[in-house]
Length: 394
Image (tube, rainbow, N blue to C red; front, side, top):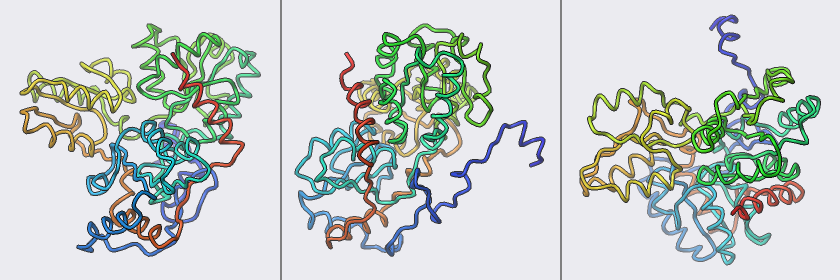
């Protein structure tokens, strides 16, 4: 790619992007940290039995959480499954469990550590399981953004609202500046609350969830939204643009949901007459506008549970979940397909596989604490404040 092409695409390298997965470390993102032990071979025919034996040996001391996007080989050992916030709350509801093994990604394990007791230890089977969206907003970048808002004379009017899919640092920033956290299920409630506190919202780090909620659910216009690009001076915005905006959207996105396009929707409607298109609100605005139904992961599951036999569905979310749902509902005559023709796993979520889980459980069973995720006390206090504001939403 030429320099001109790079500039045209607005590709800006960041320190995190330069890390090689599995090598070196970054203090603000655990992506790229080597596994300190020897993993079992993926071809070991005894992996399932080894995982089962280690989990039985640990008994009630371990509680395994499995995010919906995890591989089936991992999900089979989960005590509970769900989205990130549901799992963090499930962990907090099991105070007798000494070890919380979170089969998800780094920000999820951080949230579990924030919500659980000091006696509980949260473990992430592979420290390289990060989230590209969460990594698109660093503490330093957000602090610089706040300086830009201050210079524009609007910081006092702005309430930060951060998506659950963010680092503990960003959650702490949100709590410290009077804001709240949201999930894809309660984003409208969070924004309603925020606009009762101030005149503008800084929405972090997923621009699509913020835009879709503001325009689709709250009746705002696209012109009410501006995108703050942390790789450009002043976010690529003038002070006048910031003052005129109601929603200041961080330039972040989900690498999985961002792949779906309007062409994907049009193509599946041509291929499958009568299909219902159901997508996650992290998808682009034009995809959400063209879909029949839009909702969180939990919403997607419930919608398919309630769907009539013989109905046809194209789902715009992570492929592991879509395949699992397709297999689950096939006996009921429900046809469920992936919205796009291109395979679209969450690459970092998929880093947690059976060898990593076996290594984790066997290490814990032998009394060796590995891959603990621990949020420092100051960050935890402010992040918990932001989470508690969300829990108090009407």
